[in-house]
Length: 421
Image (tube, rainbow, N blue to C red; front, side, top):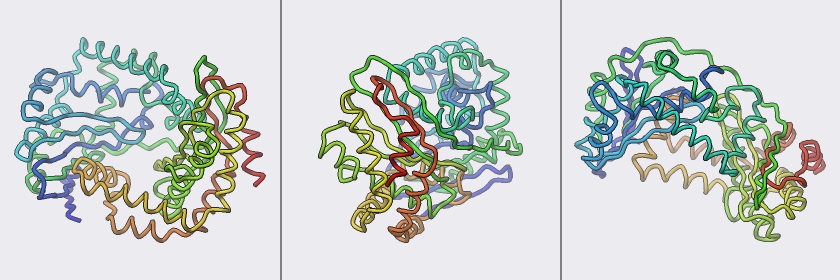
């Protein structure tokens, strides 16, 4: 691996991975702050900042930002997650200084013009409305809210209309000065890049970042529960989940990932084979495991017609329960292979590679080598996978359901079903 890391006196870290056979470069700025870092009155502000970053600076208008990057064939984008926010670009190798200049400009010199702010609030309100109209998205927001009720980790990233419309320049400025600080940020680049050149550009262009101590993260406490939203839909959208594991619990985390892959990670998985292929009870069914800094969620999602709910839920729950004692070595090997292919695919894409190393540096203060991760995956035993699966199913269930949901099982019945195996 060709990863190089430099930490500037301000605490700003620069990480690169040279891929000299490429003619392009992917680069960006990752901030160790996302929706769970917001105070209650700031709910949705991280996502709003992502939008406002492209709406004009002291040196460039919104149109000029778009035209400059696209004039060299590049693209510019951003994304907000629960624990991180990212701003990134993909350009030809010779245009990396321009891309870094634009990224620095939008992160340190944004105007937050009141007219642009009001327009972008309207755009986000439409985005929130789009989620409300998309049950397979909305059901996961509801699921998170019940798993972590009244906690930052359980809030939807987009915020609420009431919060979004309340944001003003002062609140935005306070959030930026608190969270967009040098020690919480990583500048990453992969592809046709030279480490020292990226360091020199970054040191010059990001010199104005504030240097402040980190804010204490509000701990997450999984609770479980249920939320049902009856709607006139053709299908019911159902998420059933349990307490998962933090990505800091490395060995058990990988075991939980393998359990999720084996039970519902592909067409050969138990859920897909039993629920869809054998019984035809759902078009879409899959399992997931999401890890956070101090918590995790494991579960499955299914979309099915009202008449099939009564059969689908016990069948799916039985698949999970039986897997905790009945998984085979063949299934574990298959799940491990899927994980390794997904991991190693990042080597072939500079954008995936830079995202991987930048996020790891924020999460772990170091980069995990591919060899280390593969070794950890290979070391997981069948017993490890069954153990974490059993522990997850012993936690209080979380249920979220939207649509024709009269026959959806209660959390109490779910607990009984998985506990009886």
